[in-house]
Length: 249
Image 1 (cartoon, rainbow, N blue to C red):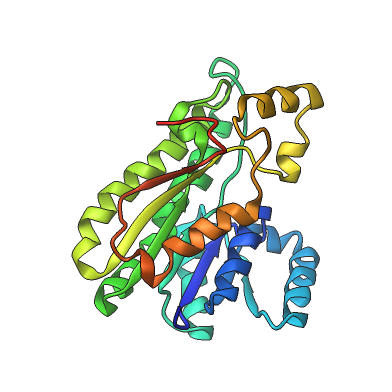
Image 2 (cartoon, rainbow, N blue to C red; image 1 turned 30 degrees about the horizontal axis):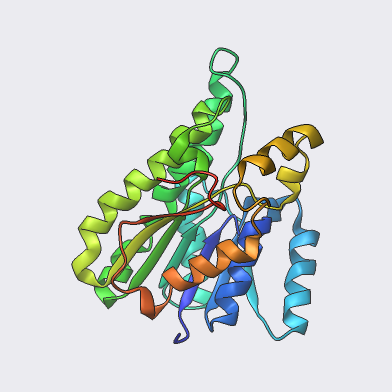
């Protein structure tokens, strides 16, 4: 891949880091955007320093993806440091799980704002440049539960399903401009968040996965890397499930 500029939201989360590293190894100049950098900056910078020792440079940007103005500034900062954004991976996301009867409005708003509104807030600032230059790759990280639903996740499932609706509509708008828009929907991954699930519940989840294991973030990142490459120019509006066969459709 030529030296493209990539912006990854949620970039210092476990999946975000794997995606940033993959794109950097593919030759991209990468910016990792994450609100956690405002409260957990040392951790982000230690990761940045470790990669730098391996010859991989990542730009860290602290921004709130739920705030349109913050995203405006973040994209402007990225482009001032690295150049126009060619690749956007919308990976920022949170959970606030509860059954609907117990779910309060703040928990609904937080998940919809972080997981879905953020896709608009960032994509809005890069799409014109991509269409004008005749090249762009947008990958939205949805979820298995945005496809099949999950008890206690009306907010999360709604937001993740909405991401693919956004993908399909935008893909139609920009298909003739050299810009592709796709969704990747991971299943349960080997991350700290999943690892915090009670052991007996986690064992039941793994039993439901035909491959008999959790996914690795590097496996998700490999798929994202392909969709961001020049070789994926004829793929748009698609939703790629990567869940070990947990849900087939």
